[in-house]
Image 1 (spheres, protein in one colour):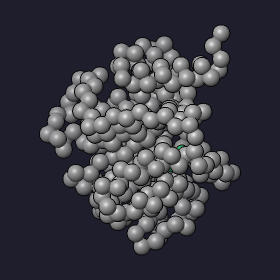
Image 2 (tube, rainbow, N blue to C red; image 1 turned 90 degrees about the horizontal axis):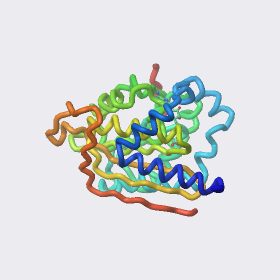
Image 3 (cartoon, rainbow, N blue to C red; image 1 turned 90 degrees about the vertical axis):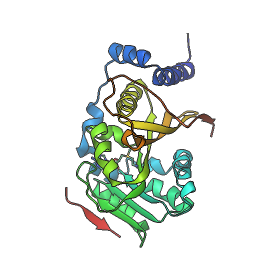
Image 4 (cartoon, helix red, strand yellow; image 1 turned 45 degrees about the horizontal axis):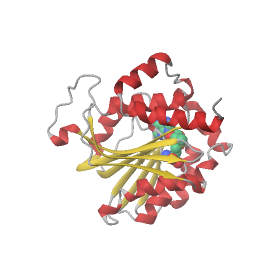
Length: 258
Ligand SMILES: C[S@@+](CC[C@H](N)C(=O)[O-])C[C@H]1O[C@@H](n2cnc3c(N)ncnc32)[C@H](O)[C@@H]1O
């Protein structure tokens, strides 16, 4: 009989295989429909942050994928304007600051999380309590980062279409989603599939972190930037990815806080 370690690895490999095979994904989601209940509860965040339920995001193990995301800012030589959607307590901001940016705006619906993040605010760095779905700004960004947040939002493709209006003409999204178990994995693979109808994958990295989740990080750009139609057949999966890498490691009201 397979040990639990073997079963975990089998599930991870199954998820990665399903990611690259629409047929396998459809078969798996038919066999095991995705339960979104846990992800739809927006009332969870305030109490969970107050009780320290997300303190583990500061663990050094999390820092590895933060460094991968931050690396996407490097080509902008410390001048990137970055919007961090669902920034929480600003964990990712630490890594972004290490690489350097010209402007950083972090938004999150949790007042507690933003109150803590705001300790790092300065002239280039703004934290705001705001809902991703209703956030408004006159600023334009080179990168919009959505780190481990997209699956909590009601309608990811519509949200991204809206946020794309805040991108500079050649700007891009950097999105990370971790698949901790089969249910989460199937939910996230479905989100990637839906996003790829309207957005072009420019780069993709899969991280298989020993003892942790399978994580997929992609950079996306609106297809309209590339003169491509967005009226694609529902399950079309044309990939025009520049680079693909898989790495295994062992180790409402908007208020500003400046
Ligand atoms: C798992 S945490 C990730 C936090 C941060 N991105 C990180 O990786 O450390 C998800 C975050 O999404 C935020 N969030 C959930 N729904 C949101 C929404 N509709 N608008 C803005 N933020 C939201 C939560 O408050 C929470 O801080």
